[in-house]
Image 1 (cartoon, rainbow, N blue to C red):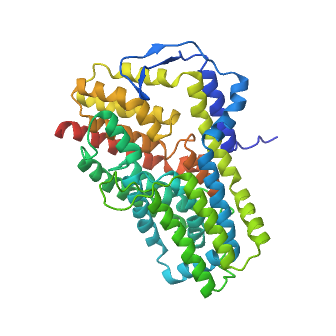
Image 2: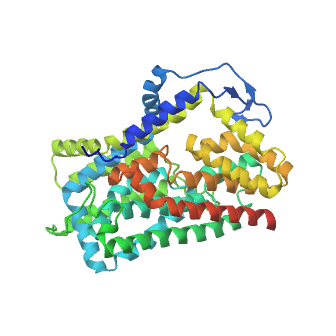
Length: 462
């Protein structure tokens, strides 16, 4: 009897397995903590604490604790789903996509560099990452309709923004927080990071365009199959692009533009523009109001708007659950008292290293740390106050420690299953995690090697 072919587990199973592994680790990794001043760890103050191994009960509760911890992101995702459910019912998106494809007339490939540059600018300036979740249901159908696969649609957003986040220039959530803890200004090291952004964004665009061209020419070369996923848009029976649908698309676009503007910290970037300072609660309200307004524009009844919005929320419930479960891994590590221990091991490994060795070791240590702590701001708060003083002893400036930190954090978050954005995006595109790894690993390797070149150059030219 022929054995069954191995199938990659679902995202839910992968994340639950990681939770179990972390729980097991809490039984073997010594627990400890640093002394904290105003929430910041003090280098050299690590000390052992009472063991806090996490058992079966903690494993079972981890996903729910993570969901509570990430409830703002999860509610945002549900509101986006409700908003898109109402918009999709109007037929405006189908009509708009058909219009775009028709007007491009075989030049759809130029959408890739244009959109990736826009997402890349968002990534490098204000750390556009979690907010990209709202764009996947919008853009994946566009690329499916253009004859590509869901991987291309995901890549345009994930790798476009990801390359920007890796080489953050003035990103306040990674570069800003880390620079503050490293005792350097946001402008120190900005020229190196700006050059890094140009190189990385160009490499990402080239990588995605080359793959897209292969898939367009020969659909069998897709890692998932052209048209795979439920977000497919059929161009066979297109609906007319009426004035009402044009008005709906104008409001639809305006909602996304407001979202982007509202989260940019212009003051921290040195720009004299009004700062709204919105985050997930305000953005959730924005999509709720946008969905109701568009439903009224399409002359839906009150009950129809409510039912359609709730059905749209239900479509993205699985994505919200994945985000909550992935956050549970970090919660379990903190409850088990092993987060600071792992950081302390990094501190010990860096003691006595020379400048080049130090900066490369910092980068390599941050790679596994990011898997365990996917939040860039959280990782910066925990680790940079420890790493930066060690860098001064090794003759490495705080700006290079910041660059090593954000480059590793951004790189890992493109591929790690503990990153909510990655798992959420793949769930939206119905792309199995193993197929994403198969597709993106070469670009990850390019980014890894290029970052090490930039860091060494920073030491030698510093």
